[in-house]
Image (cartoon, rainbow, N blue to C red):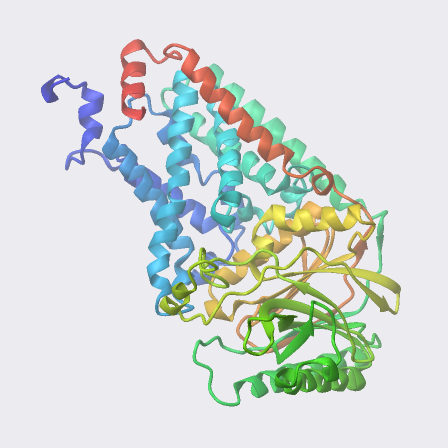
Length: 583
């Protein structure tokens, strides 16, 4: 078609025009929706001193501008698609600004990650438009299905990243998030997108009264069912029992890539100082501590093992005996002083015999949680299984080790073999702990798989333990977003979680996702608490991401149906133009 023969709708959306109202600009509409969703997310309001307002309620309507783009009858041009993508990129740039903090090179990754994640809002708009306009699906049904499906893809593709999911806007609203124990966090995102679609339909001048009534009735019934389910689950305490006394030890060690001399000793001294403060407070309260938990990497004496088993120093190669003695002395000193067990974030050096290595041993370094009993013996190790690319390893560097010379990393960390259930004798009897480390809580299926595997082995965990070092982000909203991830993992698996974080936020989260205790950020602090244990298992733990997979399958079916139908009620010209612009 020659340029002067294009339809008015195509011409109005083909390029930006000065006289065009802002609400007709896809970029402006995407930016509006992005800002609303950003304001709904944990930690954003704190930047403006407004954290005490119920921003989670905004999450029920925040994505409505994005739905407005889906509802537009005129086709979306190529330039319009670029604007939608740019709007999505802007949202992720706002949400993930703290990626710039860890290292001078990480600002390079900030726009790259945002550019990748911006593809998902674009895909959401394009797929939803097709199944609504070509397939005739109600937007309040199609949009939540497509959104949940795309969140599922985002959680898996390129190792996965689901911090800042739409569901996380509800972290401070316990009634809403209880459905996570059945449908996962994806179920909460589904409900929120349905609500946003309803708001968009009610505000859309082109929507008929019958459609508005149907959208409102469906959304209201769904929301009431979610809230009722949440009320029932929160008030079901028949399976709860008192938990062990746990002390979360939060240091205020600032992150650096260029450590000064004596830094390791200062970190250990600071952790020991806060440990003593916690023990004193527990003693004064009349509840001695069963378990002290230190954050990720805060035990600075390397732990050396042979073939993945705790190894006496005398059995270690001479080169490593100095490290082994230092760790043993600290283990023994901590246990003797406190008479309690410790769960410590350590760097573990595992040695395996090698005929080719210069030392006679190959060395693998793991990011590890080590359980030390009250006698000072390391009894169990959990090695992080879900490593962060470019933070803990460089993709493809196993075959091209020279890649590490381009980064501040000297080498990559090893990948753990799998989940570990750590038995602990406490004042209330034996308890099973399941540690996880850092961003493993960001990915729903990682924690769910750990719980499911341990349960299948007859070692279902009583308490999830997350140790993390969020000092890299200097108190930014990343801390709040990371905490929200932990809240959802606790609900999904109906298992309480305690979080020990360097610089914060350390927390005790019950099996309903409620934050029972919380530390201050960027300060030395501690929590002594006895989290209630929950004997219930969850449907999500047993059956996994059935809901998200169903939404993914539903999206495929809706797309196939949209291809088999005609104009979907849009009119032949509009339908043809829509197909031409999107194909």
